[in-house]
Image (cartoon, one colour):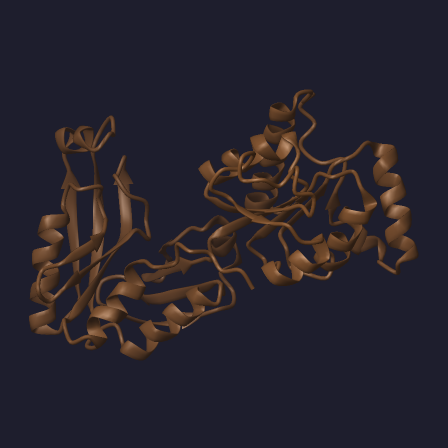
Length: 324
Protein backbone atom coordinates (compact mmCIF):
# COMPACT_ATOMS: atom_id res chain seq x y z
CA UNK A 1 0.00 0.00 0.00
CA UNK A 2 1.27 3.49 -0.86
CA UNK A 3 1.54 5.65 2.25
CA UNK A 4 1.57 9.44 2.35
CA UNK A 5 5.01 10.92 3.01
CA UNK A 6 3.84 13.74 5.29
CA UNK A 7 2.85 11.78 8.39
CA UNK A 8 5.92 12.89 10.39
CA UNK A 9 4.41 15.43 12.73
CA UNK A 10 4.26 16.48 16.37
CA UNK A 11 3.12 13.09 17.77
CA UNK A 12 5.87 11.23 15.92
CA UNK A 13 8.55 13.67 17.07
CA UNK A 14 7.24 13.65 20.63
CA UNK A 15 7.54 9.86 20.78
CA UNK A 16 10.98 9.90 19.16
CA UNK A 17 12.36 12.57 21.51
CA UNK A 18 10.86 10.93 24.58
CA UNK A 19 12.35 7.53 23.74
CA UNK A 20 15.70 9.15 23.01
CA UNK A 21 15.75 10.45 26.58
CA UNK A 22 15.46 14.11 25.59
CA UNK A 23 12.02 14.57 27.11
CA UNK A 24 9.04 15.82 25.13
CA UNK A 25 5.90 17.81 25.78
CA UNK A 26 3.05 18.01 23.29
CA UNK A 27 1.20 21.34 23.04
CA UNK A 28 -2.24 21.35 21.37
CA UNK A 29 -4.67 24.16 20.57
CA UNK A 30 -7.89 23.11 22.32
CA UNK A 31 -10.06 26.22 21.89
CA UNK A 32 -10.03 29.46 19.88
CA UNK A 33 -12.04 32.67 19.74
CA UNK A 34 -11.93 35.34 17.06
CA UNK A 35 -9.42 35.15 14.23
CA UNK A 36 -6.96 32.85 16.02
CA UNK A 37 -3.86 32.14 13.90
CA UNK A 38 -4.17 28.32 14.04
CA UNK A 39 -7.19 26.05 14.10
CA UNK A 40 -8.16 23.81 17.00
CA UNK A 41 -6.01 20.67 16.98
CA UNK A 42 -2.84 22.40 15.77
CA UNK A 43 0.20 21.03 17.60
CA UNK A 44 3.81 21.69 18.44
CA UNK A 45 6.28 19.56 20.37
CA UNK A 46 8.97 20.82 22.73
CA UNK A 47 12.00 18.82 23.87
CA UNK A 48 13.59 19.01 27.29
CA UNK A 49 16.65 20.67 25.76
CA UNK A 50 14.67 23.46 24.15
CA UNK A 51 14.00 22.32 20.57
CA UNK A 52 10.54 22.92 19.16
CA UNK A 53 8.74 21.83 16.02
CA UNK A 54 5.26 22.67 14.78
CA UNK A 55 3.11 25.68 15.61
CA UNK A 56 0.14 26.64 17.75
CA UNK A 57 -0.15 30.28 16.75
CA UNK A 58 1.79 31.01 13.59
CA UNK A 59 4.66 32.45 15.63
CA UNK A 60 2.82 34.71 18.10
CA UNK A 61 3.13 32.75 21.35
CA UNK A 62 5.45 29.84 20.58
CA UNK A 63 8.17 31.19 22.85
CA UNK A 64 5.87 31.37 25.86
CA UNK A 65 4.47 27.90 25.17
CA UNK A 66 8.01 26.50 24.92
CA UNK A 67 8.90 27.86 28.37
CA UNK A 68 5.72 26.45 29.90
CA UNK A 69 6.30 23.11 28.19
CA UNK A 70 9.84 22.84 29.54
CA UNK A 71 8.52 23.62 33.02
CA UNK A 72 5.85 20.95 32.64
CA UNK A 73 8.58 18.42 31.89
CA UNK A 74 10.17 19.29 35.23
CA UNK A 75 6.94 19.16 37.24
CA UNK A 76 5.42 16.23 35.36
CA UNK A 77 2.05 17.99 35.24
CA UNK A 78 -0.16 19.09 32.37
CA UNK A 79 -1.23 22.70 32.08
CA UNK A 80 -3.79 24.73 30.17
CA UNK A 81 -2.51 28.05 28.82
CA UNK A 82 -4.59 30.95 27.51
CA UNK A 83 -3.25 33.65 25.21
CA UNK A 84 -4.75 36.71 23.62
CA UNK A 85 -3.18 37.36 20.23
CA UNK A 86 -3.06 41.10 19.63
CA UNK A 87 -4.08 42.71 16.35
CA UNK A 88 -0.47 43.69 15.77
CA UNK A 89 0.88 40.18 16.26
CA UNK A 90 -1.92 38.74 14.16
CA UNK A 91 -1.17 41.15 11.33
CA UNK A 92 2.49 40.09 11.45
CA UNK A 93 1.48 36.49 10.63
CA UNK A 94 -0.93 37.49 7.89
CA UNK A 95 -4.26 37.96 9.71
CA UNK A 96 -6.52 40.99 9.73
CA UNK A 97 -7.25 40.83 13.47
CA UNK A 98 -6.31 38.95 16.62
CA UNK A 99 -8.03 36.38 18.78
CA UNK A 100 -7.69 34.16 21.83
CA UNK A 101 -6.38 30.62 22.05
CA UNK A 102 -6.17 27.95 24.75
CA UNK A 103 -3.23 25.55 24.54
CA UNK A 104 -3.02 22.27 26.45
CA UNK A 105 0.53 21.17 27.32
CA UNK A 106 1.05 17.47 28.08
CA UNK A 107 4.47 16.09 29.08
CA UNK A 108 4.99 12.67 27.57
CA UNK A 109 5.37 9.84 30.05
CA UNK A 110 3.79 11.53 33.06
CA UNK A 111 0.56 12.96 31.60
CA UNK A 112 0.43 11.68 28.02
CA UNK A 113 1.19 7.98 28.48
CA UNK A 114 3.93 6.61 26.25
CA UNK A 115 1.85 3.60 25.19
CA UNK A 116 -1.08 5.85 24.21
CA UNK A 117 1.24 8.05 22.16
CA UNK A 118 2.84 4.99 20.55
CA UNK A 119 -0.59 3.63 19.59
CA UNK A 120 -1.50 7.04 18.13
CA UNK A 121 1.67 7.11 16.04
CA UNK A 122 1.02 3.56 14.84
CA UNK A 123 -2.56 4.41 13.84
CA UNK A 124 -1.38 7.45 11.89
CA UNK A 125 1.25 5.39 10.09
CA UNK A 126 -1.38 2.78 9.18
CA UNK A 127 -3.76 5.46 7.84
CA UNK A 128 -6.36 4.71 10.52
CA UNK A 129 -8.65 7.51 11.65
CA UNK A 130 -8.26 7.90 15.40
CA UNK A 131 -9.26 10.41 18.07
CA UNK A 132 -7.34 11.29 21.23
CA UNK A 133 -9.81 12.13 24.01
CA UNK A 134 -8.72 13.79 27.24
CA UNK A 135 -9.70 16.29 29.93
CA UNK A 136 -9.43 19.72 28.31
CA UNK A 137 -7.69 21.24 31.32
CA UNK A 138 -5.37 18.52 32.59
CA UNK A 139 -4.75 16.21 29.61
CA UNK A 140 -3.91 12.56 29.93
CA UNK A 141 -6.35 10.71 27.70
CA UNK A 142 -7.01 7.65 25.61
CA UNK A 143 -7.65 6.76 21.99
CA UNK A 144 -10.93 5.89 20.32
CA UNK A 145 -11.59 4.68 16.78
CA UNK A 146 -15.39 4.76 16.86
CA UNK A 147 -18.17 7.28 17.27
CA UNK A 148 -17.53 10.99 16.75
CA UNK A 149 -18.65 10.56 13.14
CA UNK A 150 -19.27 14.25 12.52
CA UNK A 151 -15.89 15.24 13.94
CA UNK A 152 -14.09 12.66 11.80
CA UNK A 153 -15.98 13.70 8.67
CA UNK A 154 -15.29 17.40 9.21
CA UNK A 155 -11.72 16.97 10.53
CA UNK A 156 -12.94 18.98 13.50
CA UNK A 157 -11.15 18.73 16.83
CA UNK A 158 -12.76 20.49 19.79
CA UNK A 159 -14.12 20.49 23.33
CA UNK A 160 -17.28 18.48 24.01
CA UNK A 161 -20.07 19.71 26.30
CA UNK A 162 -18.78 17.47 29.10
CA UNK A 163 -15.38 19.18 29.07
CA UNK A 164 -13.49 16.49 27.19
CA UNK A 165 -11.15 17.59 24.41
CA UNK A 166 -11.23 15.52 21.23
CA UNK A 167 -8.21 15.70 18.93
CA UNK A 168 -9.02 14.22 15.53
CA UNK A 169 -6.16 12.49 13.72
CA UNK A 170 -7.39 11.64 10.24
CA UNK A 171 -5.12 10.17 7.56
CA UNK A 172 -4.10 12.66 4.87
CA UNK A 173 -6.61 12.92 2.04
CA UNK A 174 -5.67 11.24 -1.23
CA UNK A 175 -6.91 11.53 -4.78
CA UNK A 176 -6.33 8.69 -7.22
CA UNK A 177 -6.80 9.81 -10.82
CA UNK A 178 -7.10 7.13 -13.51
CA UNK A 179 -6.35 8.73 -16.85
CA UNK A 180 -3.60 11.34 -17.21
CA UNK A 181 -5.64 13.54 -19.55
CA UNK A 182 -6.06 17.33 -19.81
CA UNK A 183 -8.65 17.41 -17.03
CA UNK A 184 -6.19 15.63 -14.76
CA UNK A 185 -3.55 18.27 -15.48
CA UNK A 186 -5.92 20.89 -14.06
CA UNK A 187 -7.38 18.73 -11.30
CA UNK A 188 -4.15 17.51 -9.71
CA UNK A 189 -2.78 20.95 -8.72
CA UNK A 190 -6.23 21.98 -7.45
CA UNK A 191 -6.39 18.86 -5.32
CA UNK A 192 -2.93 19.48 -3.90
CA UNK A 193 -3.92 23.03 -2.93
CA UNK A 194 -7.02 21.61 -1.21
CA UNK A 195 -4.87 19.25 0.88
CA UNK A 196 -5.03 16.03 -1.14
CA UNK A 197 -2.04 13.84 -2.02
CA UNK A 198 -2.57 12.99 -5.72
CA UNK A 199 -1.66 9.69 -7.34
CA UNK A 200 -1.95 9.43 -11.13
CA UNK A 201 -2.57 6.08 -12.79
CA UNK A 202 -2.15 5.51 -16.53
CA UNK A 203 -0.38 2.65 -18.32
CA UNK A 204 -0.06 4.84 -21.42
CA UNK A 205 3.41 6.38 -21.11
CA UNK A 206 2.58 9.21 -23.51
CA UNK A 207 -0.06 10.45 -21.07
CA UNK A 208 1.37 9.71 -17.63
CA UNK A 209 4.71 11.40 -18.06
CA UNK A 210 6.87 13.51 -15.77
CA UNK A 211 6.74 16.33 -18.32
CA UNK A 212 2.94 16.51 -18.06
CA UNK A 213 2.81 16.02 -14.27
CA UNK A 214 6.10 17.29 -12.85
CA UNK A 215 6.89 16.08 -9.35
CA UNK A 216 3.76 13.94 -9.00
CA UNK A 217 3.40 10.24 -8.18
CA UNK A 218 2.66 8.43 -11.46
CA UNK A 219 1.89 4.71 -11.65
CA UNK A 220 2.24 3.25 -15.15
CA UNK A 221 0.28 0.13 -14.24
CA UNK A 222 -3.12 -1.13 -15.27
CA UNK A 223 -5.68 0.44 -12.92
CA UNK A 224 -6.66 -2.77 -11.13
CA UNK A 225 -3.02 -3.46 -10.27
CA UNK A 226 -2.56 0.14 -9.17
CA UNK A 227 -5.69 0.07 -6.99
CA UNK A 228 -4.35 -2.96 -5.14
CA UNK A 229 -1.02 -1.22 -4.59
CA UNK A 230 -2.52 2.10 -3.50
CA UNK A 231 -5.18 0.70 -1.19
CA UNK A 232 -8.46 2.62 -1.37
CA UNK A 233 -9.54 3.66 2.13
CA UNK A 234 -12.13 6.03 3.59
CA UNK A 235 -9.86 9.05 3.05
CA UNK A 236 -9.33 8.34 -0.65
CA UNK A 237 -11.21 9.71 -3.64
CA UNK A 238 -11.11 7.98 -7.02
CA UNK A 239 -11.65 9.87 -10.26
CA UNK A 240 -11.88 8.01 -13.57
CA UNK A 241 -11.18 10.15 -16.64
CA UNK A 242 -10.29 7.76 -19.48
CA UNK A 243 -13.70 7.03 -21.11
CA UNK A 244 -12.18 3.59 -21.78
CA UNK A 245 -13.95 0.61 -20.15
CA UNK A 246 -10.73 -1.42 -20.37
CA UNK A 247 -9.16 1.05 -17.93
CA UNK A 248 -12.13 2.33 -15.93
CA UNK A 249 -14.03 -0.90 -15.25
CA UNK A 250 -11.22 -2.85 -13.52
CA UNK A 251 -10.67 0.13 -11.22
CA UNK A 252 -14.39 0.35 -10.49
CA UNK A 253 -14.59 -3.34 -9.61
CA UNK A 254 -12.07 -2.75 -6.83
CA UNK A 255 -13.32 0.69 -5.80
CA UNK A 256 -16.92 -0.43 -5.30
CA UNK A 257 -15.70 -3.03 -2.80
CA UNK A 258 -13.67 -0.42 -0.93
CA UNK A 259 -14.62 2.31 1.58
CA UNK A 260 -13.35 5.10 -0.74
CA UNK A 261 -15.39 8.20 0.16
CA UNK A 262 -15.82 9.36 -3.45
CA UNK A 263 -15.95 7.55 -6.79
CA UNK A 264 -16.49 9.64 -9.89
CA UNK A 265 -16.42 8.68 -13.55
CA UNK A 266 -16.24 10.95 -16.59
CA UNK A 267 -18.72 10.46 -19.41
CA UNK A 268 -22.10 11.47 -20.74
CA UNK A 269 -25.37 10.15 -19.37
CA UNK A 270 -25.39 7.62 -22.19
CA UNK A 271 -21.82 6.52 -21.42
CA UNK A 272 -22.67 6.14 -17.77
CA UNK A 273 -25.77 4.14 -18.63
CA UNK A 274 -23.62 1.61 -20.48
CA UNK A 275 -21.23 1.58 -17.52
CA UNK A 276 -24.12 0.75 -15.20
CA UNK A 277 -25.21 -2.11 -17.49
CA UNK A 278 -21.72 -3.62 -17.46
CA UNK A 279 -21.47 -3.40 -13.69
CA UNK A 280 -24.92 -4.91 -13.28
CA UNK A 281 -23.89 -7.83 -15.47
CA UNK A 282 -20.74 -8.18 -13.34
CA UNK A 283 -22.94 -8.73 -10.28
CA UNK A 284 -22.78 -5.37 -8.54
CA UNK A 285 -25.91 -4.29 -6.69
CA UNK A 286 -27.91 -1.15 -7.36
CA UNK A 287 -26.64 0.41 -4.13
CA UNK A 288 -23.03 -0.38 -5.08
CA UNK A 289 -23.42 1.18 -8.51
CA UNK A 290 -25.23 4.14 -6.96
CA UNK A 291 -21.98 5.16 -5.24
CA UNK A 292 -20.58 6.27 -8.59
CA UNK A 293 -20.92 9.95 -9.40
CA UNK A 294 -21.51 9.91 -13.12
CA UNK A 295 -21.58 12.04 -15.08
CA UNK A 296 -18.85 13.33 -12.79
CA UNK A 297 -18.81 16.75 -11.12
CA UNK A 298 -21.28 19.38 -9.99
CA UNK A 299 -23.64 20.68 -12.67
CA UNK A 300 -22.14 24.16 -13.08
CA UNK A 301 -22.18 24.23 -16.88
CA UNK A 302 -18.47 23.43 -17.06
CA UNK A 303 -17.04 23.30 -20.58
CA UNK A 304 -13.23 23.49 -20.57
CA UNK A 305 -10.96 20.91 -18.91
CA UNK A 306 -10.17 23.39 -16.13
CA UNK A 307 -13.85 24.12 -15.48
CA UNK A 308 -14.62 20.41 -15.38
CA UNK A 309 -11.79 20.00 -12.87
CA UNK A 310 -13.39 22.70 -10.70
CA UNK A 311 -16.73 20.89 -10.84
CA UNK A 312 -15.07 17.60 -9.84
CA UNK A 313 -13.19 19.23 -6.98
CA UNK A 314 -16.39 20.84 -5.71
CA UNK A 315 -18.29 17.56 -5.79
CA UNK A 316 -15.49 15.70 -4.01
CA UNK A 317 -15.46 18.24 -1.19
CA UNK A 318 -19.25 18.25 -0.91
CA UNK A 319 -19.29 14.48 -0.52
CA UNK A 320 -16.39 14.58 1.95
CA UNK A 321 -17.91 17.23 4.20
CA UNK A 322 -21.64 16.66 3.75
CA UNK A 323 -21.73 12.99 2.81
CA UNK A 324 -23.90 13.60 -0.24
